[in-house]
Image (cartoon, rainbow, N blue to C red; front, side, top):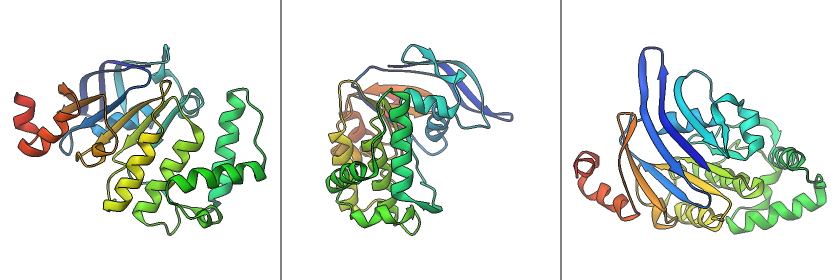
Length: 246
């Protein structure tokens, strides 16, 4: 599904990713953990196509060159990014935003558009799984939402759009215990043989609800250790430096 080989990413004279290698097969969930400044968010930004980075190396997604595509083309191919800090979009209704995004993806997939009535029923069904009040559909995108509500809204988008590759950039950041459980269980429900996920996180709490196939330690722009889900607990117990040295 996703093959990354010797990926570097720089901003000006500063190298952030420094020869990163990563492979994620279809249906797998991988977690990337690491200290501040290791390059975790840079990795998500580069994969999503954010401007401002100079890159070398190769990133192959579904057999094609991901780095050659615009952000819109990447989304059309099935890549989804859940933001660490979801932005507010005043004046744009949440229902309109979600409905438009879903129909845009369905158009690319050769599927018929879904009407407003059917979409409303579909959205309410997905929101119920995330303990979201349907009233959020009538509000502007993320405007006035709490941190937990913004993150649930991101997972709602993920659930509705059904991407091939989902990148979750510190989705657990700012969540209380209850919201973390709801979001984690919502992500785990989206596990599918034809969908892969890359979860970027600082802490192992989210991974109590989403069991990753592999956990990677990212330090100084490259992956220095890989293990199963037990590695996340080891990192919490001994820290990144000690765990990476083992």
